[in-house]
Length: 521
Image 1: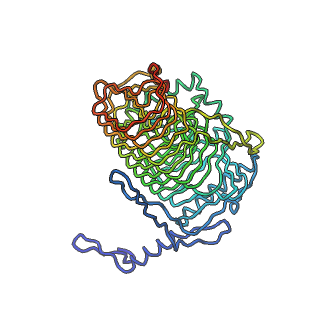
Image 2 (image 1 turned 135 degrees about the vertical axis):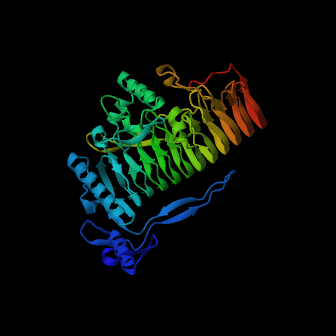
Image 3 (image 1 turned 120 degrees about the horizontal axis):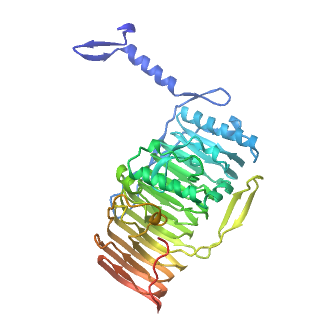
């Protein structure tokens, strides 16, 4: 062959010295990138991984957290301009894209958002990139939907589709991070209007549900059009592995705040989240495994921490459970549920351990928002909401899947008044879907092996509720060491549930009242 690159003998190929030299040259060339000033970067150091070992009542795999090379790519070196103007947005958005590309090409490092206010549109991460918000940095996002096109592969309430890009998006990446002491504060005017869910939006949900239920390929489920108004997630890591979100402050979100979809080996720690809009869950791991959430603060208008695994046929098609998830040492200031599972759980949920969480009922909650036209950052105090439950497992006969091996313990909510109770399981939670769309197929969720213990609560209605399915009763539930100051309702209600054990339940004042059905379904 020409150039003597390899020789063949009896059908086998043997590489010559020239081949090896050529390969080395190619590799050396591949690790050279160009900085903003045109000077080369050499990837002498590469991504390393910190191994995180987490204690849990199940076999928890080691989580790998990326440790990035000491290379910084400041967005100001690529032309970013601070301020709220359209010109500043164009400059900053372009600079962020260039800095991410350079960091990725160099083999990894930090893309630095420095102190100041920076307005942009969608940010798409690449592998080996740490998007770092310096102290006093405020990353604001336009509320113009055109800034989140072209559409990307994402999901909406458990159904995969192509929709407006999440504000910060990573797809099929590894070794990525979002870190720093800065703030993320999107403009919200358009997203608040879209939250109204007019008829055109509900019709779009019907179409998406029907496409997902009838096997329409994901690439044909185009939702970023017309008046569909499907709000984007704030942060979504989609099909990513070895990821870190650490220390950032988040103020407001168009939809779900942090969405981890089909991810593996992730740590979320030290973040401070405030979002009180419609559907503003704090963090939604979906079809995700090997996850640690620790030392975080959540102040939400919806569920604080909610674990999902896809809706109906899409969850069954993907067939990936959310599993091996530990949540510890967190504070919840507001939220419908402190920890929720479902209702999108068709891929299954198992091996969940939530412990040492405090509900801070007296906390003052403050948002930071960006003015729609001025860009001025202002403070606003939110109305404190009354939570429904500490742990809530919600499903329906369209979901299927399973929920098993769940432990919640060491929860201090002694100052909180709950609209429902300590612990609830409901198997007929359909929300808007009940009357909106038909059931294409019924599958019953198997729920078993649930432990709730060492809990302090202020006031509840009926504190323990299990409303199982008559054809698939809930099995093996342990409730122990629970102290409740006041109960107004019944002491418990169990339907279609087997082997439920209560141990050491203390109620300070029991005021018997008729059982109240949950309104959150």
